[in-house]
Image (cartoon, rainbow, N blue to C red; front, top):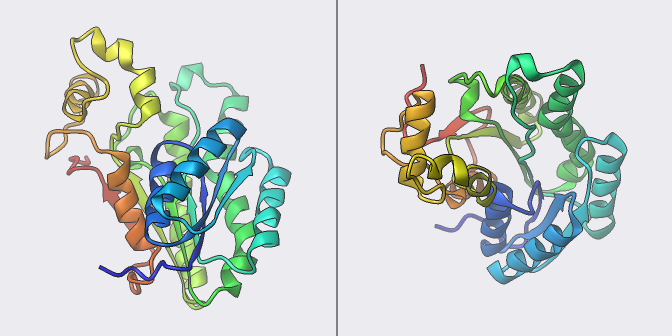
Length: 267
């Protein structure tokens, strides 16, 4: 299927690892030039090389602190120095976890800075470039926890719920300009960081944190959150859905919250 991404320009925030990197590689493979934004220079450089190998004609590795408004503005100004317009913005940043009794006011502020305001600031900075393009798309990554609550994710979920609402509102305000805006809600996804953080936890139950079926077994046992197809997802599966939504092939989906979760039973 021709997606119409050849020659496009794209920014992927959080593009140095996990789902963000998978999305950046997918866009590059479709012929888009990609700017990946993240904090760590080493991880950025490694990711940039992977995106180049995937097929991106040009890759920008832009260092940014997504909790800092000035850093975000400077990052997008750097993109503007290289490209006169922008077709695609994919925002993947999220805050850390924590239960209600563990969280201070500063923790809540940090959660909304990363989980919501980073998207506000990124869209604000990107809009002049998006409006200069012949066509433009925005996708934000929320989470399935906005529809199925978890006590350990209270601030994370609140910030991601606000992000989903923001995305819906942007679809209405930008639709008349032809800018399509959608939100992808990943289910449980086996990323490298997920595997590393939970390796010992799952191993205690005789499970492999890199195995999608074992991961979903643990999630269902621990949180009571089953999945219809019986396994966790992979970053490439989030990338496939996101790549379609930001492509020219998508000409009519906007304002949607798209679950990519293997059939999790939201209640």
